[in-house]
Length: 409
Image (cartoon, rainbow, N blue to C red):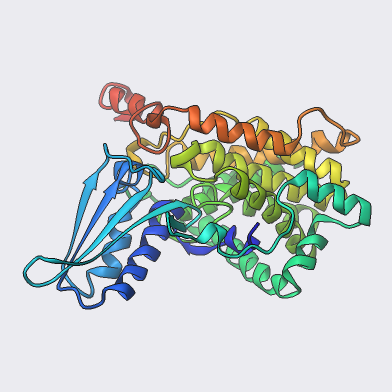
């Protein structure tokens, strides 16, 4: 299992798989073929189906167009075998003859892979790859999840997570200040600032919940506008973990040191999912994005409140289990509807999972690892129209009523 640094990546939204991954792929191909007179990039499957809404073409052109004319070819109906998010790069000479080509896939979280190259498996540092194995080992040695992360990754992980936490906090603050309509054509107004202001007028319980919504919305809206965010585990779900942790620090006064330890625990749980299943919406639907983010936030918050290893695992399991089957059907191919609202509700659900688990002794029938396995199988069974293609579900429902329903006009 690789470093949790692969879980938390800093970059511009709105999508780790559709923006960060393609941008990195373009830079890598430019290094492979800097002498081309022209570039052509063919996008396949889910990457092509929602690429325009996710700014995939912009991410690639920003890299290649500065060096030579670049053509983007869209093939949304063609799915390559390795992964739904396929890219084919070609470098051409002045006679339009191919001098270099490369097929690569953006498999989630900004990670790239193909048959001969896989960043997901490039740095195996953890000897254990399931929560059950890790929990049993730590229970025997009297250690916490975050201590295991430090043991494996070394003390340098704290500097890395400190940078991650600063970027997360800044995304919340920037999102709370921003107002207006999000780009993309849906005319969706930002809500975070208004939610935050309105929350201040309520009694403590409602104020707390309203603030939590506002913090998660703030980051998700920053992502939708192409702002700088942290994958946790993806851009589309990037508001859940920072929303919860920012809220708990504001409400409960948890120190940065304790927040970083919670982030380490969250990263460990996400790492297990990435190793044994997937966090790609194009591969398993939104259960792999918002569902995993909710699980991360549940584990992190449970640790902050002093839970046992078993209670933390239970909180993470609850959060993921109750997102099973969640589809990825973004309206207009944009990371806005239903993505932004889902971040806010998943943040609230994460805290509920924490409370529920901490009322128990941590014993339960279905393990986190079993839910991860079921999530992967459920994702395989979902039709492709519910996996980031905008060809079914809410995406189609919204298009059918556009211009008829007053809310859609």
